[in-house]
Structure formats: structure tokens, C-alpha cells
Length: 375
Ligand SMILES: *Cc1c(COP(=O)(O)O)cnc(C)c1O
Image (tube, rainbow, N blue to C red; front, side, top):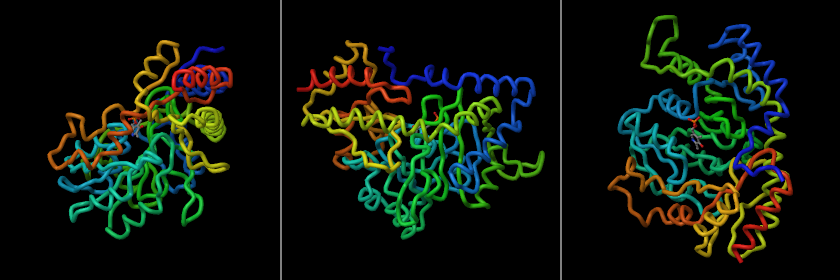
């Protein structure tokens, strides 16, 4: 059996090594390291793939979120609602811009932001909602858009974990990240579309917003050395763009491999009454399994974690501490009883190895080890 890893980037690289190596060496030869033609080409490739009017590449997924919020003109004191159960980057940029983060509970069934909790959190100061397609699963975007329209709010989709995922709603099939006013993603190596360093992008169908954002990523310049707004320096470099251009045509195949591995896990683990597996629908791309996360409901999660580690099976807890309990984000307005689900999830969840190169020998070993422990 091949060595188990949480994410196996090496085996994936070996399959595309020649193409990637050539593409990278071409960038070195061209010396167009920043804003080279590869970046422009990748932008166009991704626009086509996502069926979105504008892709603005940037340095990472955290910048992408920050720049999206700057582009929308959000002002200090504006309230931005997001989920308590996500990676800290989502709330970090809200706080950094001196906007007011409003963390809300999530839904036990899909671990995404709770629609009811959003409704309860809206005040006259609310200006935006940031749904996160957590672990690769689509948020109910029709419900989000409906709330946003009723209250005149911006929707910023944090799509760092679900690129290539599809939402089927009132408007038919739409790629995740292209439904709200603006969407963002990360090309961190372990994400579903990962480069070989840092990278990110912002998506929008709004021409004016795209123009504003193109200036913000480049020091607020719309004309060379004229700085109309305060911007940032956030670029995707040409080497990363070259890698991404090779990998993008494989994204659907990569996501299918993740879904297949998820189905294999779920069929075997779902029969145990103490294990709750993620819901998978047939022939639908609403979940692209950035992570495969199960819940252990008999208080054996921490024991299982130690047991798997002992058996050299990598696993992880995403996320062990809800954001509302993180020192940087505690706020006296929060009541512990409003976060019952996130609190519960942080005690029950465990993420198993999930990547594009898992084989059934590896999965059988992981599954049997888990079932022998949780009985
Ligand atoms: C990874 C991630 C980010 C940040 O992306 P970086 O490229 O690491 O800055 C933001 N939000 C979520 C939900 C993520 O998983």
C-alpha cells in the first residue's frame, strides 16, 4: 500500500510532471515573472471554465476576500454576517477592514451557514453576507440570494474550498463562486485547484466592480502612477499561472476522483450508527469534497483521532475551536447558546485523507481501522 497522506500532491504531480515542468521552464526563459502572458491566459481560461465575465487573479485566497470587500466599498462599522464554522481567513479580513464581523451558527445537516441564523442576525447596519461553501459543499444560494435581495445586502461567496462545484437552483446550474455579487477562491496547493505556491482569484459578472477591483489589486492605479483609491499589491505570479493553466483542464476529473473516494468511504462508514457521513447526491456536483468530514456521535472522536494517529493514518480536525471562541474574535454580543451546532460540530468532526490519488487499498485500510475502533 502506498503511504497514506492527508493530501498526496506528489502522486498527482508525477502524472502531469512533463507538462508542468515545461510550462514553468518557459516562464523562466521568458523572464516575464510578473503579469506575464500566462497570467492573462489563465484568467481567460478560468473565465471560460466558470462561465463568468471577470476573473481577477491575486496573491492568495485571503487577499481575494479582502479585496472583494474593498471593491464593494464596505465601510468601517458595516456589519458582515458569516459562519462561525470556517477557516479564520473569512472573518479575519472583515475585522482587518474594521467592518463588524457577525458570526452565526451553522446547519447540522450540511455544516454550512444556517439560513435561519442569518435571518435572525440582520440589523439596519448589515451590509453583506459571506457564505462559505465549506469542505466543498454548495451553500443553498437561492436562500442566500433571497435574503440579500430582501435586505439589500451584498453576497460575497468564499469559494476557497469548492472550485468546480455546481449549484442547481432557480437559475439552473451555476458554478460556485459566480452566483453572488462577487466570489473568491484560493489556489493554495492543497485546495481542489492548487498551484505550487500561493495564489487566489476574485470572480464577478459586474463590469464596474471588476474594474474597481483591477485597480485595487494594483495599488489603486487605473492609470499608471495615478492612485485614485487606496489599494494593495496582490498578484498571481506567472509561474503559478503556468501551473494552473496545466491543472485547470484536469479540475473536473480531480473533483470526480474526490467524489468517488467520498462515495466509497460513505458506503462503508455510513452503516455504523455512531458515524454520520456527508450526504452525497448522485450525478450532481453540489459537493466537490475539498475535505471528507464525518461526525462521530458517541463521544469517541478524540479517541479515534489518537487511534488513527497510532496506526499512521493521517487525519485532522477542521475546525477544533469555533471562531466565536477564538481570542481574536470574542465579542460580548455573542451568546453561547446561539452557537449550539458549531460547538457540537467542533467536538464531533474528523476529516479523513481526501485527495485525487486515493486507491481502494488505502481506503479499505482506513475504513477497517475506523470501524474496528467505533463499534
Ligand atoms: C484556504 C481558505 C482561505 C484562504 O486562502 P489562502 O490562499 O490560504 O489565503 C479562505 N477561506 C477558506 C474557507 C479557506 O479554506
